[in-house]
Image (cartoon, rainbow, N blue to C red; front, side, top):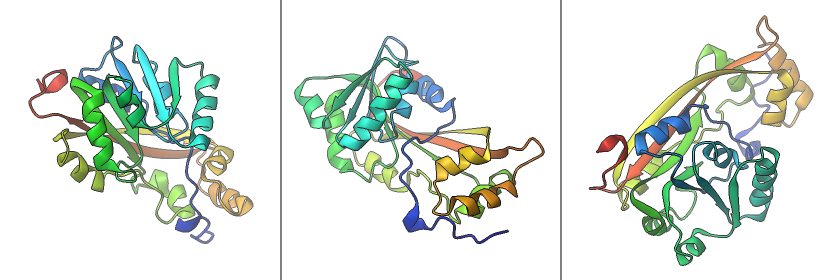
Length: 240
């Protein structure tokens, strides 16, 4: 095998189009009592991936982003998928000022990477009574079918919750549980290179070809997980 430093931690790209198991949002919806008649807010800097998925489950979905570059990437993805998503460039504080209300707020990536405490205080105003906040993440378990990822990235980037749990438990949304979904999928070598964007694409291709199976594909197992947080005393969903 070739060297294990094709993608150093400092070189890891910010993955604009994060992938989650397809059933993860449905599990979140089941646990929170979310249905098509309700509204959702997505605050994920993931290229609009979660917002597009939410649009299949919700009456209305609002995607709010501060960063112009992230907003442009999300807008492109929403338009490409012809998703019913209302795009808003700006912060959560503007939504509070507008008197907006949502049953479910989804946050992809790290809650603690933002001003988490302040954000959760704003969400206490935005989230309807009985509603919920869901912080979603993903990881690749260290199993043989994920060996190709660890060959290119000694420590593949994960979307984890270690610090997010503490922020939620110290907020108005202190009733917290975790949902986890595992999903197998396949990629071509070129799809893997496009996702990982290694510094040396040719070396990466050679490494990846050593891991393809008989069907000429790379196999992987991803774990998608969500912290679902609600207010103490709220009723609704599966926790009633």
